[in-house]
Image (cartoon, rainbow, N blue to C red; front, side, top):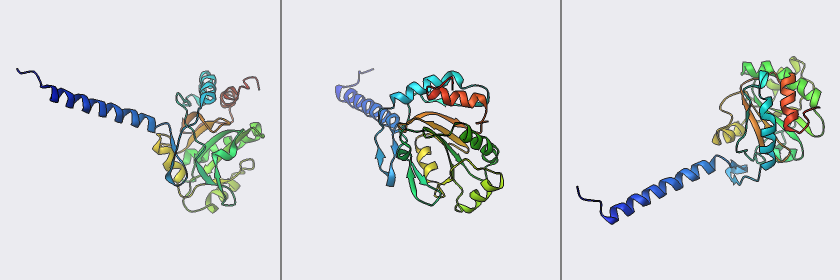
Length: 220
């Protein structure tokens, strides 16, 4: 059999190089997140979040065994949603505060079940350096989720909402928030420490130990 000519070999090398470049671009795309109006915000250095994820990893057990510490943390500062009065809020507004971001909806039974535990977690750990940020994704506006929270006696959580589901869409672009509930632990610089898919008993000792270990407060 005749050997391929040099032009054919060059063509093949070109296709392989193009394929590798595409693969690298696809992987890189996983570690940036769309900013406002669809713009792409470059990922900041999330080395502190990586260290926090390593600290939390041994505590991902029991009630929070499904917690996945981030191996390449996402910069989430550009994510936006609405406050209780309809004002636009971004995760950048929580700078210097560790955030437990929870995505929920009234039609999601596991979300409803874990809401009292999230409320209790906020009561137990909430302070100027930590907040549970539970964002309702109900499409019909704020009335239904607000009524639900009042009905079950939620009193410690601030109400946040995103009836456009834009928050969910942006997270899905980077392979997060595949369903509800999804909960992401975020460091004071706005970087992902780790993600939980599905419900958890967030007021449990195991959940608190995980969160506090990520914050460098294992003994707290």
